[in-house]
Image 1 (spheres, rainbow over the protein chains, first blue to last red):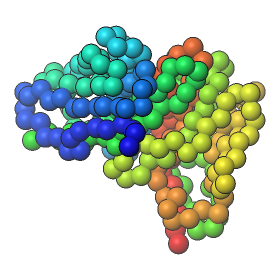
Image 2 (cartoon, each protein chain N blue to C red):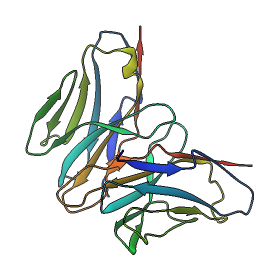
Image 3 (cartoon, helix red, strand yellow):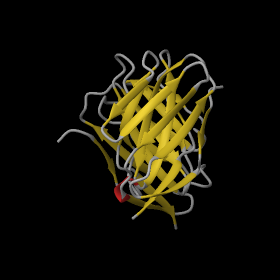
Length: 113
Length: 112
């Protein structure tokens, strides 16, 4: 069963805590993306990676960090520096040959205790 | 920078009626325009896309039109059904970037 998986579905963060959201894809896609979605809002780009061991900041990278050690994995860490982390986080991926579209995972909802 | 405006923000229609959602983009070099449907608590799903060398594309009850001169593109849903109720996002990208620029979304409600 091919696709993009995100875990966990729900995640709770305590004050001052770092948390990591998982994103895995078995589509052999080169590029991967992280978006943040606030209630009733659109998608804002946090970070993206076009190739293993390389990534670029998106529009709202402050308070977040990523790594891309493997082609199929692109974890996102929400650090304690992110003061308003409550949101729905979406991971996406796409092939970079030609202008292919992005495909999204099911999302992780992060809540602050 | 690139900007995509989407209207309306909410749209209510009766089952069986048509629905139209419109987007305007700012970067004339944009050449790829996907549309996504997002159901509550789920990730967006691609429903149709169009490239700048085509003016219209249709897939069963949904169609997309593109006016490059006016920098407008629209999603048309005919014979709407309650299961069409969701948030719809348009997006645009240029051939030389890896980023999609998203509109702010339209919440479509189809009443039985």
